[in-house]
Length: 363
Ligand code: SF4
Ligand code: SF4
Image: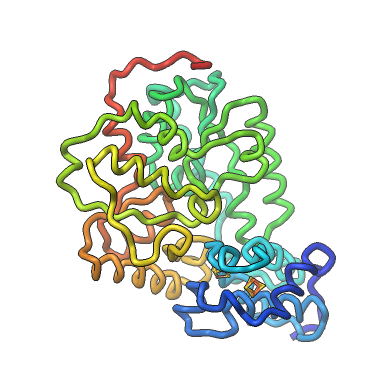
């Protein structure tokens, strides 16, 4: 134990105080607290611990520090909160504060960031010669680390989809720093985000992984691939081979609660398959996350697996089928638990026939 205080209060005092004095109105929203059956890991518990540690009311310890890492960033608590308190964002800052105080998460610290960067670079090299990729294009596609390192087929589909709708795309190389922020490396994450904004400046940006949509990119007009396709829905061709499938839509947290994009993926699936997708018991604003976010598969692998399996249990009870989503981490998480799962962008690519002439820039 140590008497070190977290230097959180000046930046996040309002958020921490609001939670600490709250009668836990979002208590049932948190998938981590739910799967761990832990009062301490409710949003109220995690925020209160950070608040007490920041005030010096409780000594900083490994367990206090670890609570900041017990968050997928699903935003369910914020959606349930009358104050729309940004718990996930505040806990990311708490991660940086505990790490700076010498209490970084052991498993997160073992992430080899150089190796992640090498795998990102390998992914970008593998995609550089694809049809539709042009390093001088004015439209930029941000694929995201999870797609570049784990879901290259979906990344290829995204290139096909965006280039068929908007013309050639350049692939953005900067990462945005999402892994570094999850580890608690704030300075490195801020530098990576600044590099991304610099690389994207003056370009029309389309984002594949909704978790990579920063507020600055959004403010500059960036769209997700899902939103772009929904805007051009009439150009999608229904795919007869998909009409016989059983498809259930899983709302990615950062696309749904993060960006408010709920109707668009459902409209796309309806267009492609001929009927609306099936729904989970808890969908749209109330959707439960896959357990894949916030580095939880690394910091709390059993909890992450438990959250995914609970979600998939609901899927099976409702009749099963194929889960469709638009988040590489969720695809990977569900697949690891044995589910049939596909990324929406791979279905969309089937509805935009190859050989379609590429529009020129500006169209
Ligand atoms: S996020 Fe909102 S509802 Fe949840 S504990 Fe904090 S103030 Fe209360
Ligand atoms: S963002 Fe999600 S995982 Fe994190 S505290 Fe809130 S409900 Fe729990």
